[in-house]
Length: 171
Image (cartoon, rainbow, N blue to C red):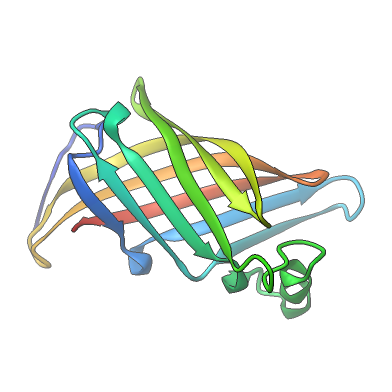
């Protein structure tokens, strides 16, 4: 049995929240309609994140860290190429970092602006976020917030659609 808010929230409840990697996912999709004429879907297996939520969305900071070497597209040869200096260069850049610069409610969603640092190069990103539920999970005696966010990153000549589905636990 759980006690969760029924209506959609646009503010993450105040407190410190930590991503639950078992119930969260960081995925991506690339559609290359030029050279390879193919789509590639993948995910990162190892990541962590925290949300420091204030009383308002504007007082909220979101940070994330992804182990770049944990990329998986379910194709070993492609994964090795993505880890190489041609793409992520994981030997020199072992982490992909995210830090929000602002979190703003917009209707029933959140506009999350931030910086992603990948291959040592920071780049701005805008994420469209949604809070799906927030409340107390009685079976585990934890407070939880369920949220998702999507955005697009430029990576050389291609665009990468990024998606985060997160369950965060109050610390």
